[in-house]
Length: 66
Image 1 (cartoon, rainbow, N blue to C red):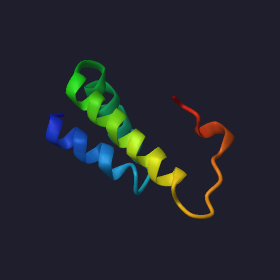
Image 2: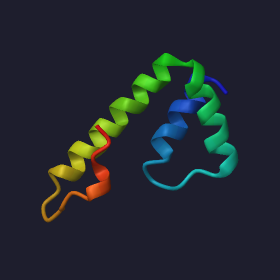
Image 3: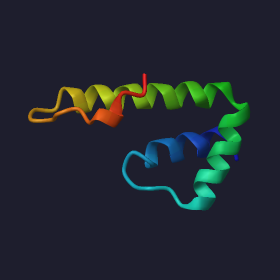
C-alpha cells in the first residue's frame, strides 16, 4: 500500500467502516510510515474538535483518547 491509498482510507473511515482487508493493509502501512501516522493523528484531532463544537453534542465517555 502506498501513502496515497493509506491517506484515502484514513479519510474514508470517517464516513464508513473499513473492511477487514482495508483495516489490515492500513495497519501494516501505519506500522512503518510516520507521515501517514501523523496524518491519522491530525484527522483524529479534527474529528474530535468538530464533534466537540457541534451544537447539542455531548462528549461520549469513551471519546477521551488523548
